[in-house]
Image (cartoon, rainbow, N blue to C red; front, side, top):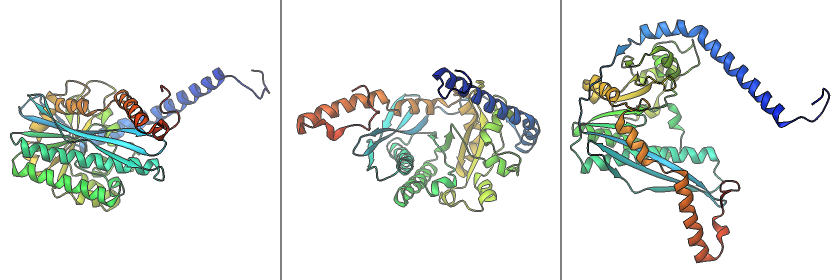
Amino acid sequence: MQKGDIFSTHSALCLSIRELVLREVSLDAGHDFEYMTKIGEEIRSGAQIANIQSHETFDRVTGVDAGEQQLDLSSRRYSVISALAYSLPVGRCFFSDPRSVKFSFELSDLQFRSISSVRREAMLYETGIKFLEKNPDVQLMLVDGPLAFSNWWKEAGRPVDREALISGVNRFLRLCQERDVLVAGIVKRPSARYLLHYLGLENDTNLSDSFILHQVLNTGERTLLFSPRTALRRDLRISPFMDAVEFPLYSTYARLSKDWAVPPIRIDLPAFSLGFADEIVEYCYATSYLRGIPFAILKADEAVRISKKFLDEIYLEVLSKVGRETGRMSYVAPVWGEARWI
């Protein structure tokens, strides 16, 4: 391309994108590095960093997870939600009947995902309840998700969906307390800033707890136990969704993996599990064989996933069935571009 030309080439666009990404990411990383030492020292001091021992104190542990897969047709959106409990050491799965969430395209994509997210979390706790009612001989329940819900959840979904989630969380925790079952919520990708607000460092950075602690914590270290509700109230003065949970909640961040790319997880504990907080964190560390995630959660996560390829195969069966019954496969046409393999 010569100077003054109005046309260019694809390679020139690729070069421009490369230069933009290299410049922006490198500048941000350099800026983060400049003040990370200072804020890291403050956090190591204020967060009372402690070493984690590696002990498998519990031998009857269950991980509970929920997942979803979306199918977009030209007529309406579908989201398939499933949830299961994976028990160790027997390696058995207990699952609830999967459900579908469907809405027309009058609902925005953001609203649809918001509703399906709340329903997915509600189904997770409903499955935990059903499992415990039929399998009471459990020492520890690990939930793949938060017990400490941020204020985002007070607007997510619809009122009926939020009520179902809160009801599920409270019934699950009450049942665990009644049956002397310990509970921990495992947040694999935390994005909150609870600890920064708890320590009064929220104005020093706009980064998340997880990113900061990824630079601060060594493998096998965790922070103090702190109240995320207290942190949220210091920030926004209100915590309506967290207040709706009947039990006081506490959290700790723990780095369980040596992999530089795997950030710390957050472990949420209800008050009735605090007496075994060290043992629960030690169990999580001892069983984090892969990707810094406790094994029971890892297996539940693997088992509950519905692959896109599997859903595509089911969609082919739908096409065949609708074609036979109506003679018009266009009634189940996909959103254009979502099924180019047809």
